[in-house]
Amino acid sequence: MKNIRKVTEDIVWIGASDRRLALFENAFPIPRGVSYNSYLINDDKTALMDTTDASVSEQFLENLKAALSGRKLDYLVINHMEPDHCATVGETLLRYPSVEVVGNAKTFQMLEQFFDAELPENRRVVVKEGDQLSLGKHNLTFVMAPMVHWPEAMFSYDATDKALFSADAFGTFGALNGNIFADEVEFERDWLPDARRYYTNIVGKYGNNVQAVLKKAAGIEISLILPLHGPVWRKDLAWLLDKYQKWSTYEAEEKGVAILYSSMYGHTASFADAMAGALAEKGIRNIAVYDVSTTDISVLIAEIFRFNTIVLASVSYNAGIHPKMEALLSDMKALAVQNKKVAVAENGTWAPSAQKCIRAALEGMKNMEIIEPAITIRSSFKENQASDFDALCAAVADAAK
Image (cartoon, rainbow, N blue to C red; front, side):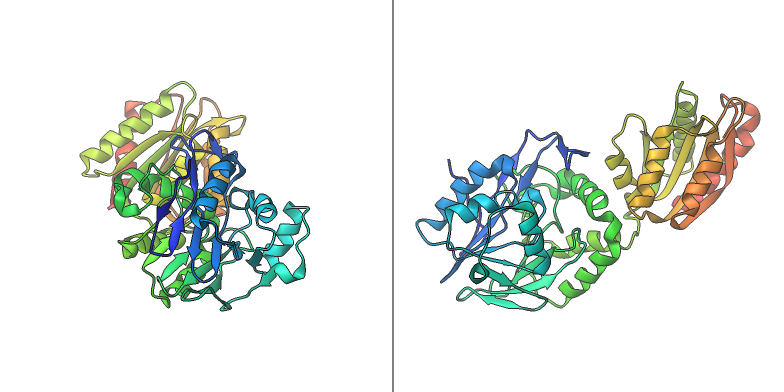
């Protein structure tokens, strides 16, 4: 059964949602599923803006056929060649054998790598920055967006509807439940955590590249943002762009403290909870506490991006650091986490080593300020360390404020 929705008079959403997939990119949990968005522009010429993942190919192809309503498909514009958006390109080419494919030079290189089907030169439209494609009253301008988050990524801008087809940018995890527009859902309440988790884990490493694209977008009048995942934006664009501005410059969204701990037998967990209580008594209202062993790392990364102050508390392990905390620190570095104030606590029964490892990892990141004093727990926290504990909590509270 077809499932299409009008975005504007001439632009139709023809995507689909997958609620069966457990891990996005076989890495990130998506308990609410994910949408794969595709759009059709109906003008003198028709243009399909990206395809979908193979898991929803049947629904997508039915939607495309319904949206075309017997018309010829003239162009397939590929803004992003990742398989969750290009997996159905091959089938689309078979079903619409005269369609011309629009992409940049890197697009066609990847197209040949993913698909065996030969595409003759007369059906290739190779574009570069600022090139245009007329569909009739709609005129597409192409904006290169390299490493947001693949090298071939690009945006397409329709000047008539002031619509930006933004590839993976401005996307989010989560299936669409009938409402395809951000203003049709409680976005800040229900969607923002998944939007943040999507950006920080998928695109977070490439803040400089995102900044370059945001500067380009600042010179364009935009009324609609049509991403490849999640809802379409037609209102509150400034609010969304402000989020991306903060995330891509590694500026904290909120003042507060995220306490992330690894604990084997509960002693370090008890310390983390005690610290949360002490911070609350000092007036800190925005506090989150996570066990790094039971919380998916993608959630931890998103929270690290969100807060201005972080506490890392870890047991020592094999003369080093607990494996789950080590994995988190490795991911922080890989995703270019920076500009944070970080407090450090370690626990060790005979040879505490976690603090040294955490400090060394933080030194490999940019603009990470370590809050002093650090604290060492010997097996379990003792009352004779109360003054050290109070000093650390006071320093963390000051940093968060």
